[in-house]
Amino acid sequence: DLDDLSAWSTLFADYAILQPFDQLGRATYTPGDGVLAGLIGTTLPYGAVRGLARGAWSPWQDSWIATFVRPAGEGEVRLHLEPGFPASGDEPEDQRIREVELVDVAAWEDVPPVVYSEVVRDLARAAG
Image (cartoon, rainbow, N blue to C red):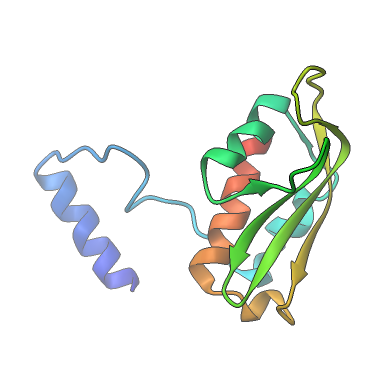
């Protein structure tokens, strides 16, 4: 909870503990904040798109990649990109977020909060 977060943040600051990656200050998102909807249509650099596969995202493997997927509770999230790119990576081109789709989950509110927040965080970071 936020009280625990504040206490841990203070303790880390008091002892000048540096975090190797975003932990206590990590950005969080909720379905009602509108951030995910605002990312639709955003252009992502090709390198950032390929970088999604280093995390929880997997390219929908085919000779042409235009979709990445990641687990979301009982279902999955599909990130649809335009124009897509060859799996060989021979023709790198920036990609536009066309759609972020839920599969086998009724609504974003049904996605575990941490998963939802990480989906938005991943896409926002990729967008720069």
